[in-house]
Length: 305
DNA sequence: AAAAGACGCAACCGCCGGAAT
DNA sequence: GATTCCGGCGGTTGCGTCTTT
Image (tube, rainbow, N blue to C red; front, side):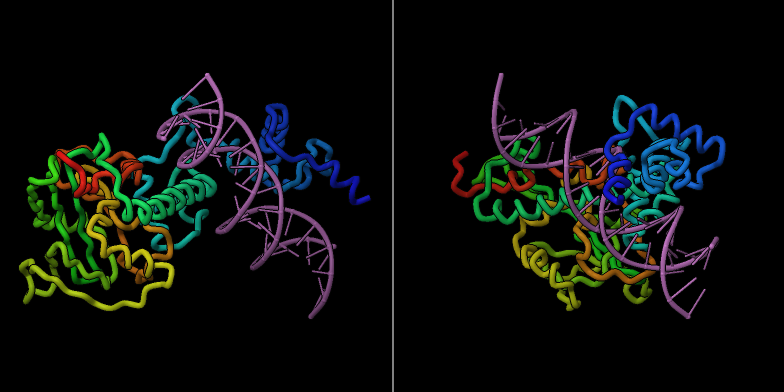
């Protein structure tokens, strides 16, 4: 008997006719009594399936772009990142802050980013052992972001180092510091990091009036990182590792690292894009400007000019 | 041009909490 | 109070499409 019942339940992609029936039901009774749709013999779908279809695809005011897809805007991405940091994986809650987006949209967005970064990090370990020649996209430049700051009082910044690597024998570099308060505001907040930056000094700011000037520092603090994070942090010894944070133009920050990277304090978390140049166009999509061959720019010392 | 990999997304599954019985 | 049902949610999977090699 149960086998017969199971047979009656239809699964898989929805047809237009089914959508029509579902829409008619909702128009008549409202978005409720999902299970009655099947009990009335209107559809051979479970109530859960009907609800899901309505919520994710059929209800009005959803963002749906027929020709170009409907990628998250930079603003939406920022919102997701901020709210994810605040609420965790509460996709439904996060979706309430994004008009026209469903929890499924947010969930898919987030998981695809996490997957992508995981792949990048995985590849990076291979790349560190056998660096490839610079990609076309990043040829000639190593750009090392970025700034971090630690709420609530202390702000850290690493500045940008743009390094010309046109030839293996002759290279130059310049530091593109973040100094204005606005830029600090644009920085990424991190808890106190146990990262030792030996290859590049960095400045930090503090709200403490006694320390109002930026300080060059080379300090190391300790923090109980998650075990999963330690491997990542270990790789930070590799100076080129920082390049995964993106080129200067789009400077995608560390907040994209997969959860959990470290434990953030519950309040005062915010992530912003950072741009070294106000006039510079903001990266339109979070992480999209991670070059697929992000470690390609590692200059091979054996490479001849 | 073909194969492999990456990506996006729809939909299913299991769990949970609240309402109804 | 116990059980059942229903809806909501987060995690996961499967598949079609796009991109890269």
